[in-house]
Length: 263
Ligand SMILES: Nc1ncnc2c1ncn2[C@@H]1O[C@H](COP(=O)(O)OP(=O)(O)OP(=O)(O)O)[C@@H](O)[C@H]1O
Image (cartoon, rainbow, N blue to C red; front, side, top):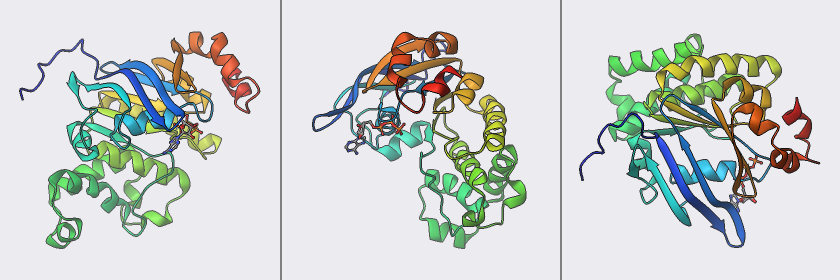
């Protein structure tokens, strides 16, 4: 199959009519959205709106019930997860997933390992190419983790562990980075640092889709916001337009997050 022609006006990600049903539960119900080159798209919605299901379906962790997912014009919804990762979609998880008994540096090296396709154990035994170590250290420096490179991942403070997940995702060289609630569980100072970190990494990855409940982070970082509820898109546009949208306020009404949306 020929590679799609480079088209700078083409969205990096285009999702059309995307649905994911679990029995009678419509986690995604006909979602349309796109992320353009250089854009950070914020995705908000109350608990259970379908935000994580969106990331899980884009990355092939869930198989879509219906709809299309295009990465730079190429249909990917039928592809296995590892192939979607190889084509350039990186992610972090709502619940941090690190190799806790490996060092911080090794956790980032896994990204190169996954891409080279060779078995992990023998890779480390055989010695790691200097270029990979230099590249991994670059990402650790970007996320202020270089001085913890030899520490065990298990010993990291919560905020550092979250940043290590981001460093690992970036080391895979994604065109599109999907961040699933990176500020979850962070205190105010950690969230402020994370905001600066995400600003910094924007220059290194073409596009970012950011799921977050922290409206301060969403306001500070998003070029555009999509709001979801019950698996549907209920609003789309600028931070001001979406966070003041009557349907968005209604969706959050009565939930603990209502005050945050208005803050
Ligand atoms: N594997 C699954 N099996 C069954 N139902 C699921 C599964 N994953 C998600 N759901 C359901 O799909 C809906 C959307 O869930 P999802 O986790 O995507 O919401 P969310 O917007 O990410 O919520 P939160 O903000 O709490 O993380 C929920 O009703 C959830 O119970």
